[in-house]
Length: 570
Ligand code: ADP
Ligand code: MG
Image (cartoon, rainbow, N blue to C red; front, side, top):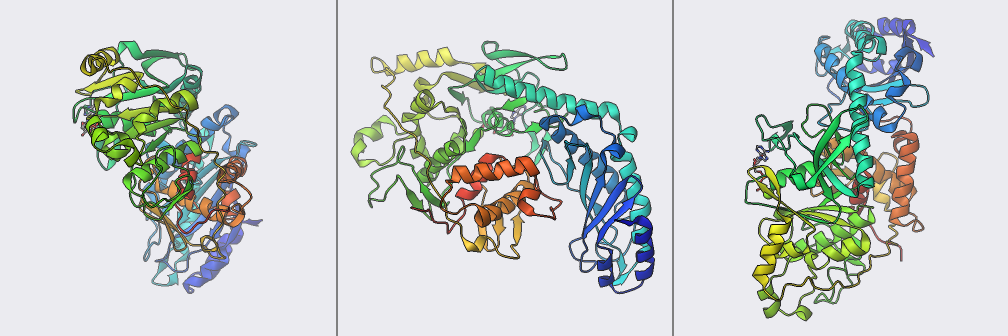
């Protein structure tokens, strides 16, 4: 490896030359306490900035092993280091000057969720730390200004590295708190399973967000308070005691008047599959990690999903056991979303009436009289919800404001009233019985069978070639070459970087896994194992981009299911 002195000599030599001479700097250099690897050099000062990888050896970083010996702690500490590094970096960004992006120094920006990111990695084996960042190599016009890059690489950056990546200089109390919070969150997650809970919302949690476009907590919000009947208590690993609402597995309704906080509670549960940072208000809103929010999604494509449990005997005789469409309706899309969530391993489904297809959710009695069952292809969710739980172990948490028909199917009914939660299960059931008179028996369950999930997708050459381009459009879609995958309805994607990672995963799967032999489940399983073992480099090869965040396995399925122009092997 070259030394930092060699880099200094090189930079002095190319000063005042044309911008392309910067290309010679590519390579790794040993600095005091870390390696600076210039992985990619930008073509001109206005192009996307140069990509730098920093590697601090374990002995130099000096992180105590108990901060990263478990995956959940490692991810939380990585997230913390990245935030701290980014904060200090932003203070010196653009203090070196020049044209275009000259002087820019940045790492990714983290949101409220704690995600595994390519921006910072701690190696579990030796405690070494990797940071991936961007630097705008300075120039005046297109003439290299090496003096400014020397300032960045030999003065500004070493200072940030020393203060934020070396344990002896860190705020050690804070970093321990981060690991402690992760321990507590992980403990609750594990307890959910043991106690047959689908989710937990702590007393005192702040659920609403600042605005519709900000995930920061709302100020002066009404803190969450569990109804007594649903209260559960945890003795946390750090010795604290925490109480809150435990949502039992089964069928849970969230009811209440408009604007009383129903959707806010459900949204908090949706995001409870991720851990949140201290101060977010949802630190202790913990949902079963595989829970899936699903909704109607008109216009999506469906590739051979078996939706016959909900829809059969369509007028044009199409086969709903292997249903294809380029343009699904509200009900067929929601049916596919349920089945595909189950295929992706979810056993807790989150549904909001606001974003559902009405004819998928219910059929009222008058309608059943007028349009008889044999003329209606749809078996609504209400006629499958108990079967799904009792026969397949799939719980539902459902927000309903307008249909009392679900009362008799529910195990638990929570009413949100002025942002306060009440357990109204008994009262609501009694009302329902009185209302329906003699005809109030819960209808007998029918036997349902989940599909066998033997779908094998076939790879499509247009998803990969020598120079596959992956582009993210806001948080709405990701394009792999010319294939745009619309992910707007996949609401538990919380970061555009997850979308970008999905683009890479999608490319990788098309290139390596969809050979007609592996089922979709087997293929996704394989790619998640690879990611688990070798991180992002298992899907991106040698140069890992600095802006990837790990999606859940459920979102990998969701992405593959939304690729258009994909065929099944038959
Ligand atoms: P619903 O789904 O019942 O119609 P929402 O969940 O959409 O109601 O909430 C309505 C409004 O109330 C939103 O603007 C939300 O931010 C606000 N809100 C929700 N929960 C709280 C709370 N605990 N304290 C203060 N405001 C809240
Ligand atoms: Mg709502």
